[in-house]
Image 1 (spheres, rainbow, N blue to C red):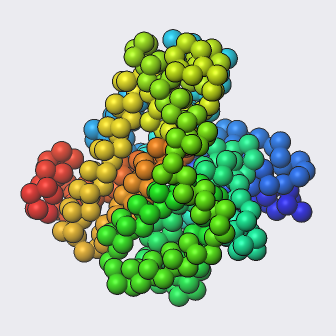
Image 2: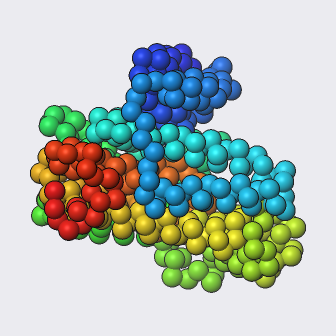
Length: 434
């Protein structure tokens, strides 16, 4: 039955894609985030959902009559350079059997991120994609939360097998990053039942995140809660919920969970933490010896024997920053960090400039929650190998799209579109002139 249900949802998505090509981006995102086929037991487990979606979507998008706008802001060009740099480092990689396979996966993700920037160009389409993300990851929030409650916090929540978020740490961070997007949808919805449903999903997702027993998610969650409160319009109501919910959730978890969180302070005694530090030092030494880094996949015995302080402890990067450093060198890391900083700054500018247009209050709220999600990912990602995860790059694309929509709205309001270009409009918005 699961296989049949998944196939029916997929076929409906393809039907909508034929009618409106941008739906292909939504279908791709559903396949990538929810990984519903990984939860089945029959024919759908090996069915090429992603390949078929891409084969249908890409030509339909470019043949469609949809408005196609290529972004021209520095953040977009930084993203383009980063994709180009990953290709360069793969050409000169140390471990081609790992690197080319990983590049293929990463470029497929980046292709649809680029298509998102070009074709998700309205509030309706943005909200559609956000709903896909929220429903896909919210499923694991509800499932994991109920499991945590039923086991008294004694079990551990895992993600869909064989996916980017199969590990307990990775699914925890993915759920955490999706929560501000849930909050945004709740802010915008006028339906009381949808608002209640999203609130309930957020509450139970908190227990699911705690149930992953991820120390990095615990730290990132505290950070995200603080920024969510700062960005909220209803600070009193949200503050009350956080003050009540977080201590209850904290006290609900068993002693074993508290002991695990307590090892954050005593990382020298934790073999997992020491393995990460060894991997980080390996990446640092590797990047210092090779300008291009190693390319994808240097987390093996050969690389650790050559560059790690302790060659006997072999571990994955367990950090978005050190993963990029080891695989793409200092140029890759600087570009990666620059993209993150530029995205946070640009989102802040969209928030400020959109205040000139009351009808863009939704965009202000959206960018505020994208900022919170970005901060949660950048903090939590310090401990996990999720540098190429779709959700982070979709957040970057949302910032680029937000800037485009604001400029388009300002041009439409000017009454003389031909007399302005995007640069002058952005400059005028910075000066507070519509």
